[in-house]
Length: 272
Image 1 (tube, rainbow, N blue to C red):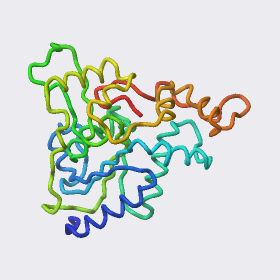
Image 2: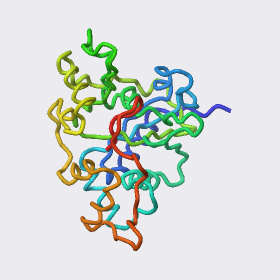
Image 3: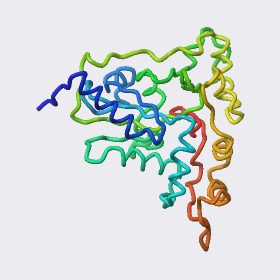
């Protein structure tokens, strides 16, 4: 039997509840219908849900590090071998929706059979109207020839100083015309600026400059930059130096998987 359609007032209440639940994580959320996402992708990459199903894209803003991650580490919640930031995001989202039927896909998760991402984070942010996904196709007569340039999302308030963390799908909650699709703000409108953005992102992303393609209202703190500039394998030692991890006999309490961290791929941006 088809799931009932909820009215706009119900959706608004639900969204306000989610924002309040995630306020300690300092996340931005953008609502959308799954159909908007599926419409721009081939069948192999679509989400297996009714087109009117309510979905939410969760973004972390610059102060997430101090407001959520460091307190998470202080409480000793980090365990096992997975990335500490990923653990913090998962802990925060899971604790925000007890008893609610929510399917959560994280930006780092892959489908076991195809090894493709469970969702395309930048595409999801774009169709939700949260951040504009700038790609080669957005540059008229681009100068790169056959050299591939990966795209990157820019937020209208934070520029590149944010991260896309998760996709929440609310099974059984369908919305119709009450939720209208809006285009993300085109905050890098000129051809020259778009060329600069894509070149900075693809060739020099470690220097952070692409993130300042527009003046942001907030940037990462120096401590946060130090953390993300450190190779994943060395981050446990940095957390120990800061007093957030205890060194155990035989090695660190936490050992991130090899290669987990900022990287280029056709699916995601360098990861924060």
